[in-house]
Every structure is written in structure tokens, then in C-alpha cells.
Image (cartoon, rainbow, N blue to C red; front, side, top):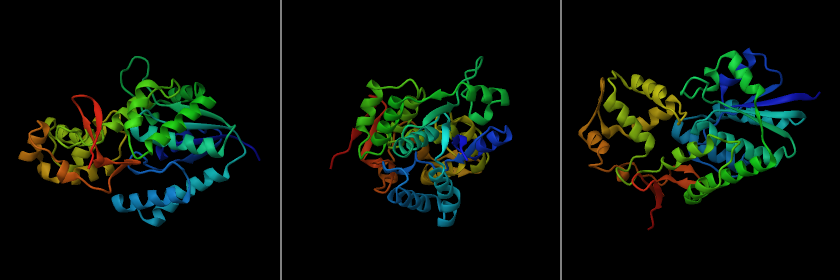
Length: 314
């Protein structure tokens, strides 16, 4: 039997919302966090999933059973769903979602060539400067977004796949160049999301990236009584990362020397010095096993002064 529409969502919250609204069609949840850890261009290959499991297992203690049940079962369902009239992608404006979106489109380009593919993305609502997530939208608003979904052209799909290849390359320098000179109107939040991605390489100034500096700045500017309250505040204040609590928890643990206490949360002397660039944590945090896409995180430095990436040569 022909399924009229296949929906691929950015997570369980969106999936549950669409089910609540009784949106017609089959729904598959893309449960990955490709903005972290090593990625390979061939999405869905055995090597791709082995690489992703190794990262998630080592960094977040994700068991093989959990990985199979939460991620691979949904992926296999995607592979087995072929007879659809259209495919609708539900992804938000933030870095987390935009990177996952690129990977899904790259897979669709290879395995669902010729299918009608549409994109529904979160955005600002008239009368507000806030960026709304899909699940922040009212029922009428999300249905209006669905009604106004963007059909991706062949050029759009080629562009997304090309950016995915660059994201997975061993050097982010070409991605930096392409974002300045080759943009695409269908993906209006992609450039800003990937600019954030480039700032996740350690900075020249203090060896911390944009996320790590954001954590320390939040501690400095907020009165917080515990690590849990800090994480909740980070989730509340973040605009373009789209990270979850486990991502922030891991980042905080790596910055342990920058904190004096968590009850209440206070910066140590080193933490305060980091914020004014009087000390540098590059050597403290450096790891040969840390990847952002296909690039080694600590093989590049981001200069906030010049707003450019620099490659470390040995």
C-alpha cells in the first residue's frame, strides 16, 4: 500500500507533536547528534554506524542495545519505506538540527533519487524576535508551517550534499570559504549554524571554543545553586546550539578546573582568567580523539579577532 507521505523528524518531541495533531503519513525519528564526534560522508554505511556507535559509547556511555533500539531501528524503518509520494523533513534552525538535516538529505540524494522532498523548519513568528522550536509552535502555527513547506529542488539537494561532504572532510577551511561565497535560499539558517560550528574549534585567545566560553560566561553572569540549575539555564539561554543536557554535562566535566564550586556555581581563579584571556586551556583540553565532523578539533584554532580558522602545522 502506498504511504502518501513520509515524515522524518528531528526528535521524539516533534514526532509526538505530529502524532497528537494526527498528521497523515508515516513518521520516522532521526535520533543522532552528528554535530558531535567523527562523521563519515557515506551516511548509513556499516562503517558510518560503527564510527558513530564508538563515539557515542565512549563519550556518552550509549550501550549497543540502546543504539540499536533508538537509532538503528528507526534507520532500518527509513530504509524499508520506499513507496511514498513525498518526503517531509522536520528540522529546526539550530546547529544540532542543521547538521542532522544535511546528513539525511545526503542519504536521500543517494537512496531516494527523484522523490519529492520538502522541508519544514522552525523560525521567527510575526511580532516576535524569538526563534521558536517546532514544538514551541501552537497547533495552528505548526500546521501553517507544514502548509508552507519548501520543496527542495535538485540543486538544493546537491548543495546540501556538497556541504555535508565538506563538513565530513579532514579540514574545515574549505567549508569556511564556501559559506562566504556560496549560499542557498532554501536553507536560510544553514550558514549561521555552520558559522557557529566553525567557532567550536578552540580559540586562539584562551583555547576554549564558543560553547565552553558560553558556559563560563553563564556562570559569571547568573546566580545558580547547582550544576543541574546551571545546565537548565544553559538550555534556556542557548539560541543556536540546540544541545541537550548530556552535551552540556560532558562539556562542564571537561572544564572542571575552571570551577571553584557547584553549590553554588562559582568560577575558580583559572576560570576567571580564561574569560579575560589571561590564561589558555588548549593544552589542558587537547585530545587527538576529539572530532568535529571529519576534522580533528585540536588541529585548528579559531581567531575571534580575525574571525578566521587557522590550521596548526607540526
